[in-house]
Amino acid sequence: MQTDQDPLIRVENLTAAYDGTMVIKNISFEVKRGEVFVILGGSGSGKSTVLKHMIGLYRPVAGRVLIDGHDIAEAEGEERLQILRKTGVMYQQGALFGSMTLLENVRLPLEEFTDLPSGAMNLIACMKLALVGLNGFENRMPSELSGGMRKRAAIARAMALDPEILFLDEPSAGLDPITSVEVDELILRLARNLGMTFVVVSHELSSIYTIADRIIMLDTRTKGIVASGAPRDLRDHTENAWVRRFLNREPAS
Image (cartoon, rainbow, N blue to C red; front, side, top):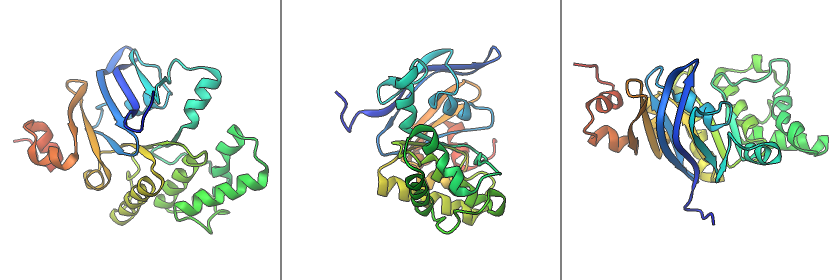
């Protein structure tokens, strides 16, 4: 029997490879309901690879990913659709369709997964855009927006179906410091006010210290998890020299 204390996501002994080259080896972790969980690591450490396995884009070489107790890689048909409806994804570049307005972009998941009348879809899309501070921009094209606004629009689309979990791939990448802070504040507001669970891939330390309840750090050399916990605790108290240097932005001696 599931309780609110049960993890919403379990990654169990996950191993991932591309073209025969192992990227991640035998990692396990859990994501609790309602927390902001960040996957951190250097370039090539497998952060986005883990995320893509968690959202079911790739099948693991070994291990499994459980979303609310269901194996996303093994699920088929209606079971898989039910799992996917629990999740929303914002990709690194936003992945908005440039030929569509913001309203039309946010409507897309509703058109694919629901039988709602057009007016109801428009109303929901407008509400999601308002949640991310883009009310009044419904008829704008993505090309008319700043990078930060496109990121927020992508988050609105990811929320269209009221998912329990939002997966965000590098939400602060390419943004100026002020805009990055605004995105961080949006994540915290959604987590606090809506009780959403976030899984965020990032390497932006200032953002991580602001939003993350817990992190895992991936290590390119071991292809595994080298540290996990609250980011400030790890920064100030870890005994692992590489983790300490990374989290304090210190060069190798």
